[in-house]
Length: 165
Image (cartoon, rainbow, N blue to C red; front, side):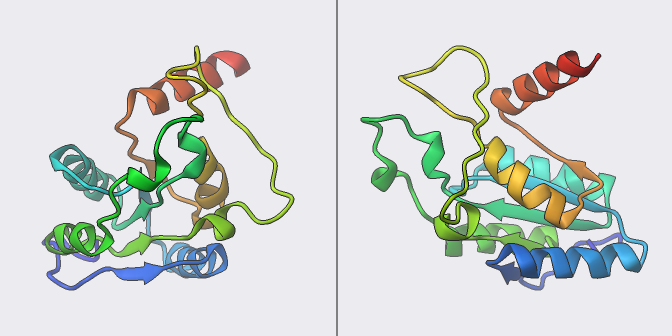
């Protein structure tokens, strides 16, 4: 978000962690605060409200769009999850989002990657949270804040905080 009024320009699309880190480093070097809104796409009004909230917290906003295969338990249909990237980007355009980070699974989970975060009791088999995208993308983009909207994110935050204090 480069000004008080959202721009009507399309956000930059970044597909690699290295490019996200380079963009973020440049923004930080220039004194900008960065907010990140992690999503799996198929954006709805709740996601858009998070983007609006993020724009109040920072002057640069990244929205992640990543259908995370680790979110799906055996028997759940990863292939049936909606992938609506062009529509999602069109929804973000009037909100002035600066960057859409839309990596593929190989970018997020290169061969040999083995970090796992499981929160709470398993839900419909083993339901792993999207903490992996946060753990991979957040440090690279160095956001000043995250704008999570899912109960699982809030649960992760509570459990993480309580494990340290």
